[in-house]
Image (tube, rainbow, N blue to C red; front, side, top):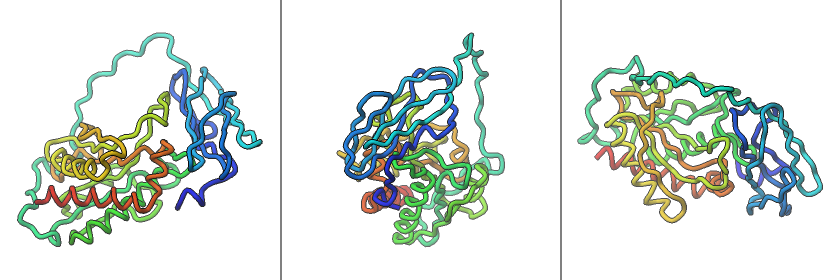
Length: 301
């Protein structure tokens, strides 16, 4: 899918109709204008339009039902969504949670694959989200994150295959997967590494045109070593385009594996107009995938 074929007269991609928001005073809105339209008015204010037609802005909201008017090229769309009320008193602090490994994994790390040829090394590639109820984040043109994740995963599979590695995909189409079945794929396939592919979105009350970075998330030392190799290659390949946040500790289900080195790549911000354009550019997508593959190869050595 390309942005050119995704453009409608006016797209309001987020909030989704009837979306329920946490207690916030403002929230981001993103969408896209038809080709040739150069201005969008949201809640009575002009919003700049990016060269692809994408736009992004923040709007003021109040508890309860909110309806925001979007005017674009003579067409008006009202988007209604719901904002939760702030609690009357501060919520009690949640007890500190001790995160543990995914229960079906072993407690000790499998041997590092150094000394093996690529044909003896199995990498599990996990395109995040999928199915009818788990789309992930949305791009301004209304393309779901699950689609972007799968496109990058296919490119990554090809790049790894070109290097001689064996590759297993957790999904190859738009199907739903139980979250805990994703890391199980590494165990059942006796994999040497597990890499989950995602694209980021800001907090509801952040300007989606501002944050844009890539990062790799991991839970334990073996995962962080894999994550660093991947991030170093991504930072090199994307130098000057947007920044790297490096390796970040995370308690994601797909990373809590003491047996198989595992990490989650947030390759870009799908909500950003610039990020969306890059993600759905096949040439750029190949650069990202080949950088991830090169990082995996570095780690294997």
